[in-house]
Image 1 (cartoon, protein in one colour):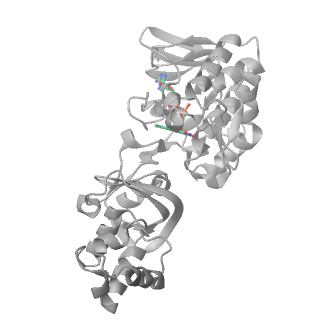
Image 2: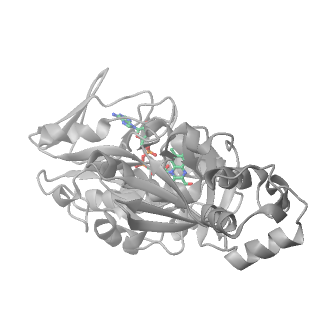
Image 3: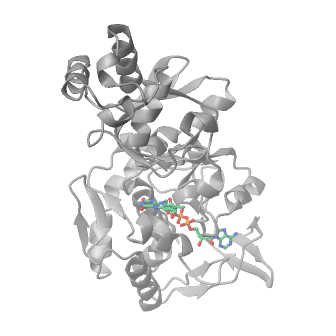
Length: 388
Ligand SMILES: Cc1cc2nc3c(=O)[nH]c(=O)nc-3n(C[C@H](O)[C@H](O)[C@H](O)COP(=O)(O)OP(=O)(O)OC[C@H]3O[C@@H](n4cnc5c(N)ncnc54)[C@H](O)[C@@H]3O)c2cc1C
């Protein structure tokens, strides 16, 4: 959508057609940010991306997406962590503004029109659709990727393989980490705040502060989703992954001793009441090899030390990640080296462009993926029209 609007803005006399497979545009957009659409991030930088950050930086710096949306009538407001949302906190408003701009700029939008193939023609490209083909001097692929459930996810990023382009193997990103169900039994739905670390073969890969959410098959929540980027690839490469949690937060051994001494007659199951989630505390008590019925006053020094360790470090072996249906972004996609970062034109086929998630650019949570989608669309659309 941003590519089509920008192409018309760059060359008002150009005929721009947007082919959409779904009955309506922007289905995935409506689901973003839990319906509120976290559309940009004030601090987006190459480090905000697990892959493709350096490639994406030209587009991200070249365009101010907040200004683009301001021109469309959408004001962006930022939260304390730099995440930008439409002032009305409605993804549907963002989509409506884009749809209005498409119509106001004279873009020909054709829905229910899946492109099934593309090929090079004498003066441009053909896009094959069920009713025939569209011919165009310039072709921009903005197909997104495989992430999401019933939101228009698709494998059309593979279409340019017929033009000689290559694809890095797609993997689900920004999803939960899967573990043995016994590890998290009874914790489904519980949220835990703190610092979370992913270790590979014993060495830390990345730490993230924030919130985790227990599921029956593992751990999700934004902090863990951030750690999931790259996890699938590591597991397939044979690395042993562990998710390290600190369920007791910053409780020191001394603080634990004081807590036990303060409530000597309480059982271990009750002694953390008001301090830790009851089920998280019980899980730590079990891992320490203790019983929730044991009274606090009867704990030996060695048992207290074991309880402290269980509260301080909880290592959960990771056996997998969520699938594409639970993922918010696709890792992998079109190899970025085959495109010019300053124009997003193919290095293999003049007049062919790609933007958004179809390219191998995958960002961390916080608005970085939409930021890339908008900016790369604006860049590809502008450049394609300019060189008509
Ligand atoms: C649940 C969920 C929540 C998310 N929340 C956020 C968030 O708050 N902030 C953020 O930054 N990112 C978020 N993301 C990620 C973000 O939505 C995507 O990165 C972004 O939408 C990618 O934009 P895109 O234009 O490249 O692809 P898409 O948004 O997927 O759009 C591609 C369009 O192309 C169409 N299409 C595909 N193939 C064809 C074909 N062959 N012919 C015709 N049409 C075709 C599709 O139907 C679709 O409409 C979220 C993702 C999910 C799944």
